[in-house]
Picture: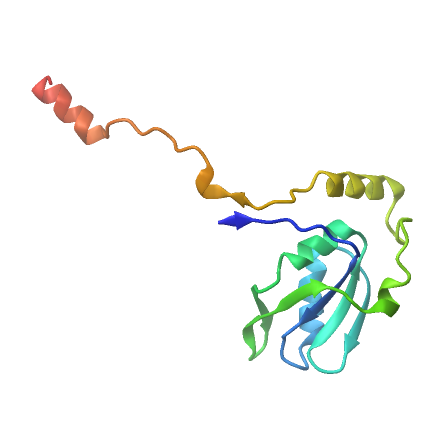
Length: 146
């Protein structure tokens, strides 16, 4: 498995691909990624969500291409999540903390962003654990005194 953490420029993300009429359920799902400060539902099956921090936005972006349960008869659907590219939403971005985010939490979030991984980490490159002889093999070695 590959773990990739992307650099996030904005606390805004765009969620798309869900069935129209299920925006409220999708928004409830994405509230699990962090504190939603603002959202703007667009006609159709997409919306913009603003999180309290860029770290929370990166959690939402990690859900891109995932299947989520939205309840009702719709069950499980695959959704897409991308960084927001709407200029009017991005225009109000400042480096100051967002409303409701204490300066302590803002400093912690900024520190986390500085030390984020920029390259994928390959899990298959992890060292293998040495496995000695099995219990059965050890038993027969003891019985037969090999």
